[in-house]
Image 1 (spheres, rainbow, N blue to C red):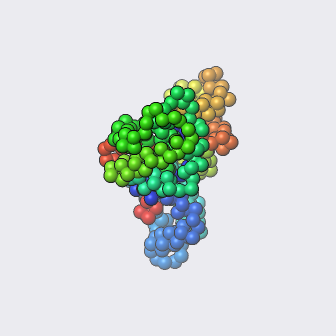
Image 2 (tube, rainbow, N blue to C red; image 1 turned 30 degrees about the horizontal axis):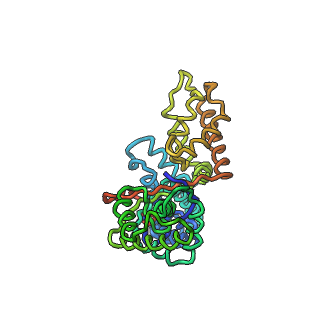
Image 3 (cartoon, helix red, strand yellow; image 1 turned 120 degrees about the horizontal axis):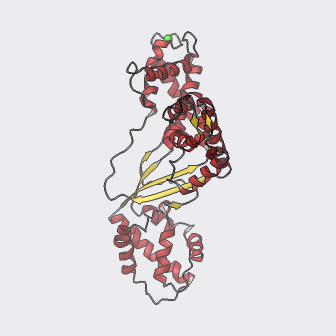
Length: 368
Ligand SMILES: [Ca+2]
């Protein structure tokens, strides 16, 4: 896993995106979203009176329930309770005459909450076929970037070949390079390119020679990639507290998440929970808050550890459910503040040697 600034990869080679940003974009683009709501509203408003009755809202409620992962209505009392709450988010407990404005507001809250959940682990499948690399080589940023990379390489007794290899390691997918630490890429792309360019082991290393030779080898690499494109799964995550902020501001989602976490906690005979369990509680709400599970991202474990220290979990005090939920919310708030002040970006690239089956059955807003 390598660390990077938050660069976005929006190249032509991108073939598949699986995350919540489509939904996010939809909701944040007022014109498009209004259009979407108009259509949805017209479909639902069966009697065309300009308002949605409880009955007319049912299909929307069912879709939201399904998107939240609930079983169908009528199959369990617990989930029916949540369906009822979704409905009352729309109707506010009134007799169910929901205007388009109200409908739009509630729908946007739900969609944003879901998008935040989906955004947690965006994966982009890139087909690296040498085109972006050629574009980089022929572009204006090639010389300055490669000069800067050259100056960063510290190989006192390194040959020109060593320098070129090292430089390839520093180029990322946004320059059209697959991860070169992958042994398939090394032996099928890089090594043959170096060989065919005949870079001499005993050539003196200078910036000038490096730029000339690197360009030659990179052109050959681009050619090889054109002949055998490499498929790379690229994931990029920035943890900046947005997911927590969304969860904390979405009352419905927050209560549901905290309830689920608390339900699985061990309690004493008075229904109290040990503060020791806060760490576990946090792990249970992590995915809803856009946080990685414990142990998955080292830098995040550090941030979370810092916040945990402030809550004296080790005193093992027993607290009531409500107090436990409050502590958990405060813990989330503290992590959010740290991340907002100092966001953490993590990016991974791995070569896909087997065809990926599409892992996500992504909620498309149009299916709602
Ligand atoms: Ca109506």
